[in-house]
Each structure stands twice: as C-alpha cells, then as structure tokens.
Length: 219
Image (cartoon, rainbow, N blue to C red):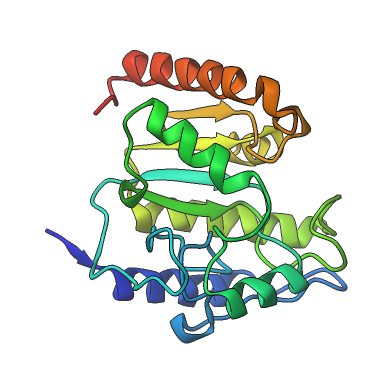
C-alpha cells in the first residue's frame, strides 16, 4: 500500500526530534517541520530526502517510494549551506559535484532517483565550513545511531548504498543487518579531475551492479 510522502517525512522528523536531543556545541538542528525543510531536492534532514526534480522549488511527491534504495551519507551540510539551499530552493543547483556524481552512480545501475531516499547518519548542521570533521560526542553518536535504526524501520529500504567510509562505519553497527554496499563518496577529491571522473563513476557503477546481483536486489 502506498504511503503519503508528507506523512512519512513528518514521522521521520518527529522521531528525529524525539531521539536526537544532545547536539554537540556549535551544532544546530535542522527544521522539525516539512515547512522548515529545503523546498526542493535535498538530502534529509535539511531537505525531505526525496527526489523533487532537477529544478528549484520542486514539489514534494504525493507518495513515498515503495521499498526505496536508502542512500546514506555521513552528515548534511553547514548552517550556511543549509540556509543557501533553502533560499535557492534545492541542492542540485550548487557548484558541488555531489549530486552530479551520485546521479551518475544511479544511472549506471538503472535506479531512478525517485526510487530513493537520501539521508545521513549524523543529524544537525556543521558549524563553519561544510568540509572537515563534524563535531561530536559519545552521547550524540549513540542518539544518531538510534535514529538511523529508526530511519531504516520507517523507510523500509530494499538495500542501502553507503557513501564513504564514515557512513559505512555507522551502518555496520545496525542490527539486524541488512544488505548494504559502500561506494566512494561523490564529493571525494578523486572525482575533481574531470579527465578521470567518468572512468571512476563507471568503476563504482560496476561494483554496485555486482553487489545487486549478489544479493538479488537488481531491478
């Protein structure tokens, strides 16, 4: 049975607010209402985590994808990046390579972005620049891990694609385990040289496709 996208996102936001309460110094929470989110395609919890099209201010879809692919990053963005994306109406229009490489990954294995839920292992907005380590504490880590477990329960993914080692380390602590694969983070410096970017994307796609065949999750 199809679920309302608005209802599922609202449930996720309510659970985030309930579970993740001990943010480290300098780390600010994102919004806890749909109206507070980036009004276009953007990763949860700064955005809805759903594909809202390639243009600014794309509409929230009526329905949440059934058995989606959960795309898991490490943390969302800086506070400045969040505010900029809210004003812009989405993340795709930024100059970063993240979305371009990620969408190329999905195209390699014939997964449509509207079949995905895009989220992160750590909640909150990083102070200062988006690059560098996210401030953290043991209590915050535990709460985010508990919320990641809850996200998986609510989203009901068919498998998880972890972006980079940090997301994978947290995903490895989830029980019971479920099928997941680690890919190179789309913002990794290895993707910056344009001359080698396409070859690296193809290699990552081949690895994802091999994983899907192995676990029977292709298509």
